[in-house]
Image (cartoon, rainbow, N blue to C red; front, top):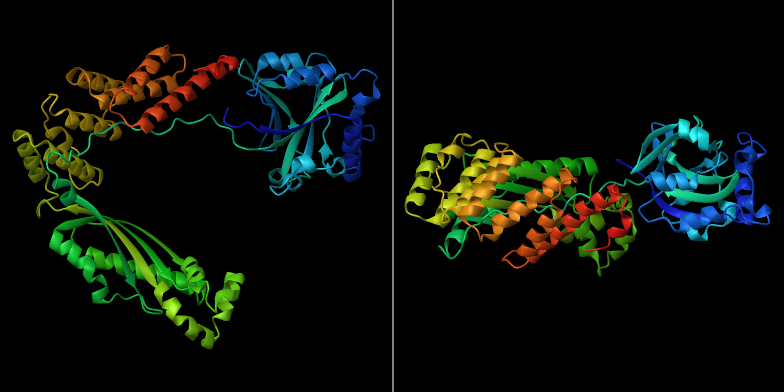
Length: 520
C-alpha cells in the first residue's frame, strides 16, 4: 500500500457533540444534507449506550491498526489494515461508515485540535454506507489490508482543499468520529549503509594522501555592476593549480550580487559572474570540469552586516521595501562600504594530482597500475584504481579498462578485489547473486576481514527486504552480533540493527504479530 492516512484525532461521541456536529452540518450545507441526516441516531438518547462495545474495541486496537480514508482521483476509499478487526467492528447489517467532507483550513497548522469547540465543526456529510454495501464495494480483502470504495467527492468541492473525516456507525448510531490528515505513510526505507570499500592506508606512505587530492575554497570579489575578473583576484587559484600540478575535477560556484537594484538584473549579473569564474578555471586545463552553479542576492550577509549599525532599521522592512529605499542615492552611498563586500563569488574546487600529461591515456594508466601491483605498492595501486574508476565513470577512458586491471587473488590484494567487486556491481556489470558469490570467495581469502563480513551482512539484509519470507532472520542477527566484536564503526553496526528491525517489523506486520514487534 503506497499511501494510507494517519489517524490524528478521535472523539468519543457524546450528546452535545452529536448535536453540534449535525447542527453544524445542517447550518453550512442545509441544501445538500437531508433534514433527517440519513436517519443516523444519537447514542446518548438511549439508557444503555449502544456504542460501548465499539468504543472498548477501539481503545484496545493495536497502534498498527489505523483507520484510513484515501482520496484518489476524487474517489473516496475506506482503508483498514487488518481483516480480523474489520469484521469485529462491522458485525450487523446496520453497521457502517459515513464520510464528512471538511475544508483543510479547518485543521490548519496553527490550530489546536484539542481546543476546537463543537460549534466549530463543519462540513458536508455524505450518505452512510452499511455493511452489505461495504462488502459489495470491497476491492481488497486480505489479512494485511481491507479497502472499500466509498464514493466520489461531489463536484462542488475542490478535492485538493478538503479532508475526509470518518464517522463510524453501529446499528445506525453514531459511535465514533475520526479526523484525518492525508499524509504519506510508506514503509520505512532501509538506512543507507552502502558496501564497505577499502580506502588508502596512510601507514604505507604517510605523505601520499596529502599529495593526491585536496579541496580548495576561494572568494573572488566583483565591482558594482561588473562581472569581469581582475588578474590579482584569481592569482591564488592560479598558484595553487600550476605550482602543485593539480587538475580540477569539479567546481562549485556560488555567485552573489548585492541587494540593491532590480531582481532580474541581479540574476543576470550572478549568472555572468559565475560564467566568468568557470571560463577562467577552464583555461588552466584541457580536460572538462564538472561544475555546479547557484546564484542569489546576498540578503543574509546584508542583514548580518547592518546589525548594530544606524541602518539596522532596514531589517524590519520587506525585501521590496529595502530595494525601494536603496533607490535613494544618499542612502545607497552611505551603505556602499557594506554592499561592496557582498558582490562576490565563492568558489570550491576538488583537485586531483596529475600523474603526468597523459593522465587520460588508458594504456599509461594501466602501466602505472601494473607497476604498482608488481612492486606490491598497495597504497599506490589503490589510488590508481580509484582514479581509473572515476575516469571510467566520467567516460574519459573506456570501460574495457576494468577487465584489463589484473589483480592477484590473495589476501594482500584483498582491498583491491573488494573495491573492484563493488565498482563492477555499481557499474551494472555484476548482479546481486554474483556479487554475493564474489564476496563469499573474498571471505575464503580473508576469513577475518570485517569489511567483507559487513558487505555480506548488508547483502543478506537487502535480500530479506526483497523477500521477507526468507528464513534467514536468525542468521542475519548472528552476523550483526559478530560485527559488534570486530573493527567496524559503531554507527555502521547501529544502522545494520536499525535495518534489521525495519525488515523484521515488515515481517511481523504481514503476519499480524503486532505483540512481537517490541522484542529484541
